[in-house]
Every structure is written in structure tokens, then in C-alpha cells.
Length: 280
Ligand code: ATR
Image (cartoon, rainbow, N blue to C red):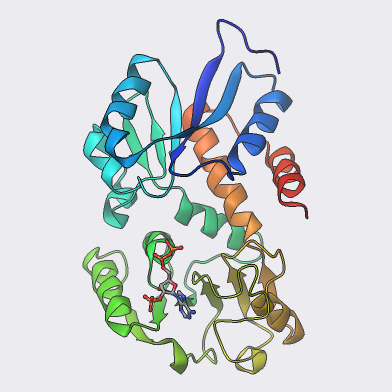
């Protein structure tokens, strides 16, 4: 990639950022489409966030991805927030054209699942009630999921998220429960947003066993390292269809790419780059 006087800059802001897989994924896409863009990462201390956004505007930076710990606070410095990002209360993508914030995490998960099944009119069980669950839940509601059950260790947190999603009026059947009461008999899709099973505790699963699963179930694990988590292994054993966490990374990135450039993201190229970076 040749960096010239005309090269457009996009990037990631977070703290820390050095282990991000987004630079290789986006730079591979720019290279494949011969676009005069470069993607880099900026480690921004929380005290400097406001200055970073103002500075990026002055430097004519085209777009940012935003990661921990800036996803919520950054909204204060934007002119506009996309409707679903505003309901979620967190932004992971900024388009500097109009200083608008988006959240592509949830749509990333939906597109990952969409490779296997459409979420419309489905009965979805989601494990976890943190930031990832929040982002995915609002998108499920927006795109026509029929029934959503949010399960968490801390049931109050699950109930709070269920109340928030219900008050969006995008869906009318949302409930919460203790994760230990998981029941998948009537579920079409199970989504894990907890970190259970993440490297190095690769044999842990957020549910006791695959015995709860059935052949018509789709199981999506937002954990992407390892590629095939304990939960996905159980799913495969039970005859359920697995959806791998790497796909959510891929599609959230693709969505950001399209927001910044207006061009269709080269999914295959981005997936190859991501797999090379992650080593699978
Ligand atoms: P993220 O932004 O990735 O969603 P988070 O906001 O820290 O991360 O949320 C993590 C979620 O995983 C929470 O719902 C958490 O449950 P609690 O609210 O009860 O803490 C859940 N979680 C974390 N570790 C867990 C574990 N060992 N077993 C079950 N749930 C767990």
C-alpha cells in the first residue's frame, strides 16, 4: 500500500488498541479495491477523548471505530446518533462526513446469523446482559425477532435490559431469567454474549451441557477465540447449527467500511485477513 499526499485516513480509537485485528482487515479491503485509504489505530487516554474527536475533524480523518472505554462517552461529542445506536446507548463507528455515530456490533451479529438463518419471527434466547447483549438485543428487536429471552447470572441486570428493549416498542415479547434456568425447547436461536469459554478457559460453556439443545437450533457464540468454543462443540454434537464469533467481527467491520466509503465491503478478502491475524 502506497501512502500518498491524497491518502484518506480511518482508524480505531480505544485504550488499549495494540491487539486490534481491525487494521489488517480494513487495509486488506482497501488494497483489494485499490482505494486510497489507510486504517490505523490510536491509543486515546479517556481524558483526551474530546480533543481526539476535535483533532480528528481538523485533520480531515474520514472515520473511526470506537472501542473500550470510549463507546459511551464519545456520543457527547457527535452531532448525530443513529436511531438504534441511540437506543443501545453506545457507538462503535463514527462517520466524520456528518459527525454521526453508529453501532455496527449488533448488525454484525445479525448478519453472521443470517448466513445460516433469518432472525425474523424467531424465538431467540440470549445469554448475558452486558454491552454486547444490549447491542444485539436492540437489533433483534428492530429486525423482527418475535420473542426474546435474556438470561444472566445477575437477573436484575437482565430484567433492566429487557425493560429497555420493551420500552423501545420495537418488540412486545421480551423476558428475563436466571441463566441457570436456560430452556431451549422452544428456541430457534441461542446467542452467547458472555465471555464464558474465552481463551484460556476454552472448555467452559455458559450452559451445563448440549443436552438442552436440539437439531433445529442455531447457536451463535460471540466469543471468537478459540474459533470453535466449547459451546459450539456442544452445539455440533447435538446436531444444532453453529455460527462462529469471527463472523460478527467480520460483519461489524464490513458495515463500518460501507458507512465510511459508501462501497460494498469485500467480505471474502476481509475474512481472509481476519483469519490470518487470528491464526485460524
Ligand atoms: P460485553 O461488553 O462483552 O457484553 P460485559 O458488559 O462485561 O461485556 O458483560 C458481560 C456479561 O457476561 C454479563 O452479562 C455477565 O454477567 P453478570 O451481569 O452477572 O456479571 C456475563 N458473565 C461474565 N462472566 C460470566 C460467567 N462466568 N458466567 C456467566 N455469565 C458471565
